[in-house]
Length: 274
Image (cartoon, rainbow, N blue to C red; front, side, top):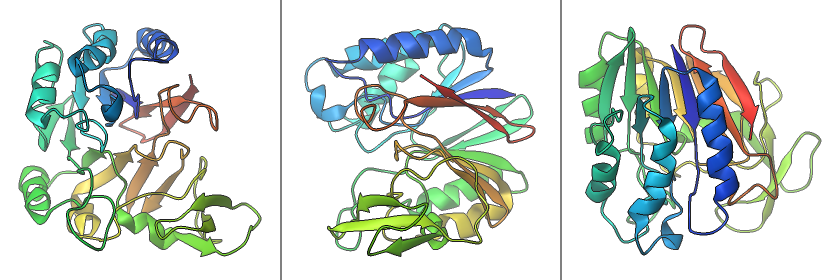
């Protein structure tokens, strides 16, 4: 099974035509069985009026290929509810999205979709956490199977594999950390990975145990959110696949916009620049 992974389109009123044209061409050539939009399909703050137009501009590109979606932290910043956004997606006959957290059985694969939320309501974290009730739902749906998980924000376990430095290091990337101030980051020396660490990953600061509780039922996890990162590595027997931003509307001044095609049998990916 071939899945086209499209993360962080950030469609908005201005500056989106290049993105839409490029993604449309890739979809037509990809010969994929499923398209997964990994969140931040629209740039919420920029779409306060007629937000559905900008969602439809993206979903129209799917051209009858089945597609599924998860929420990003920006999707519902346009003063609309997630239910309204889901209604737009579900109005397409080729949409397989069932809700905020759901499972699809397709071509012999179990595909798990989780809403990783937006911003944390309280102290201790900037980004939201995956809640225990979501983890319990996932376990009830994929127990005894080996599923592929799709969600927008990467799990906090990734930070156990990254070192933080106070000054520039060889192979490191500079970024402003959550506490403010310039820091530098790189994968630890013994970590085997492919792809690029282009910025500090931005998971929640609180670990609710999502990976620990689900890892025996997962063979891969696919994430968006961090536009400059395209790395892949194995954590606790589960392949983490990080997808970079697909939209030419936000980070394209700093890095190439990309998509990935995932082969679900081999778990190998193909990176395509937009």
